[in-house]
Image (cartoon, rainbow, N blue to C red; front, side, top):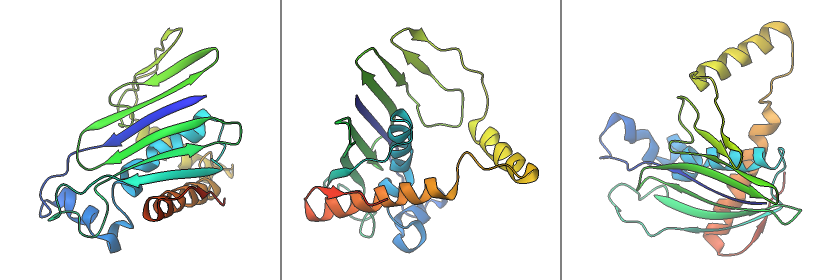
Length: 187
């Protein structure tokens, strides 16, 4: 299986309320990877059946706006390697508006079209054609689902272990981008 995905937007001025916290490492924890890239990480893991990658390689893109990005990365590209040889080539950025994900396997492909990672109606096309998915606000459905699990004592479909997995992958990507080496993912 080969996958590719990207998520990001062109950030405005650092004074803009929408942007201010995102460029502050203490508040945001990181830059485009932590904010926008986690969606691509999750898409690749879900396409692989929730599997975590075994290793990553990564590289920060050159900073084009140093006045904004002195504390956090503006853009980063990375590759996730899975145990069965599958790969995911990914990109997170604050320098362009992009939002897509594609997975290709031996017997077909699936693609989330622009915008892939929005809260609106999903645009999912497969090698068999367009899927007609319901038009729902995905964030509302997710939050309602979590609340129902709590109210009914059921396990959440997004447990803490998933968040821990995602952070382990993100930390490995940061390490790979900083040292220029392949980094094994320790989940």
